[in-house]
Length: 186
Image 1 (tube, rainbow, N blue to C red):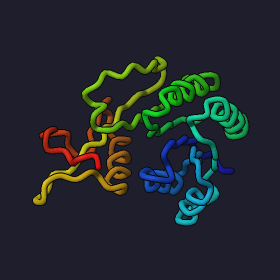
Image 2: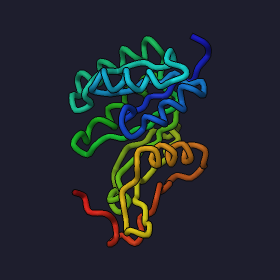
Image 3: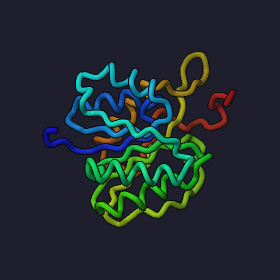
Image 4: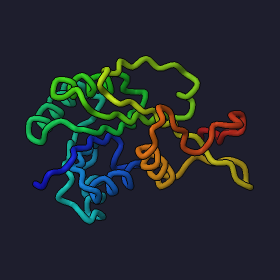
C-alpha cells in the first residue's frame, strides 16, 4: 500500500464515521476498533478509498483480546501516528491498555481523547507519555430557539476534524454553558 499515515479510531463506525471517511480520503490507513462487522462494512462502502480501511473487530471491554488484536495489527501495519478515541466509561482500562501497547511500538504519536460533556468538570487521571501529543475534545450540546439538544454525529465528526487542525489541548464541540440547560439524558 502507498505510504499512508496510520490512524486508529475507536468509535469509528458510529458517531465518528464521517471522521473515518475523511481520514481514509486524506491518505490515512484507518484501523477501526469496532464490535459489528456489518457496521464497518457499511461505512467502508461509503468511502472513496475503501482499501485504506482495516477492521479491528473486538469489544474493547475484553482487555486480553484487545491487546492481542492491537499487537497483531501493529505488527502487520505498524503503529498509528494518530489515535482518535471515544471509549465509554464502562471500559476504564481500555484507553490505558491502548496507550501502553502503542508505546511498545513508538513514542511519537498524537492522541485525540473524546469525552462526554460532564467529563469537562472531572479531573481524569490518564498517564500520557511525554512524547505523545494529547488533545481532549469535549462533546457539549447545542442551544437553539427550541432549547437545547445533543450534538448530531455529523456535528461531532466535524468538531473532531476541526479540533485536529487546532493546536489547543482542550476543545469543546458545541457548548457547555449554561450547564443547567443541557438536554436531559433520556
